Image (cartoon, rainbow, N blue to C red; front, side, top):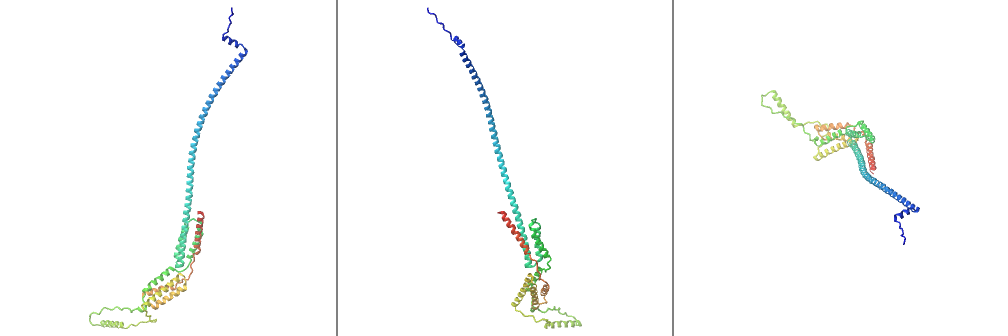
Length: 350
């Protein structure tokens, strides 16, 4: 009879297997490895969680940083826009300041140029009055007006010109000359009256006023006396006796009378020209010949002729041969100053 083979159950074999040292060590090692693996997995999971947390925080920080950067960019753009606007305003202000400065310089230059032109014109007028009319009063008025214009200006470069004008004013005030304008007007009055002056050969005896006819009255001594006086007056009308100190006045034809008057006008105009030129010799000679023509050819009993003779007598005693101060130096100084300012203005414009 066969003996039955005893078979062990799997748990019993596993337990017996555990009793082996190698298996036990292997099991312990495997347990350690598993424990380490589990621990490692736990640490990795923790690290992953920490990394995820930190990545999340980093993302938040990054988003916040991007937000702040965007805000900073926006603020920078706004600041740059403001700075650009301020720079534009500054440039505009500077351009306006430059324009205002240029305008002020132009206005100042224009005002000074206009002032110099007015002063130069006044000096030219004074020179013309002295040269062509000898009118010291008008020249003084013109120079004093020019000095008043320069006195209102504060430009120091105008001082030399003003000193010259003041010197000319003092020189004109010290000139003891005749009143050329007044003398010229007197000559003009005589010239204007020449055409109406009666000639000597045209004179007539004075008319005698006839008395009214005698009324019928009783014969008496007075009656006969008045009758004799009337007869004597009638007789005097028949004969005229005159005393002639000079020769008989020349009888002139109408055309010769015209040329006589024109010749007298020409002499008077020559006397006026000599007066303006302050040529005393020619002036006295023309006045003398004019007086001789008046006395010879014109009726000396007429009041217009007497008035003309009186005027010419006054002119004959007037000394017109004097020198008036010139204004050429003052005019040259003003023109040089004006030219210098125009040249400097042109150089600054370039």
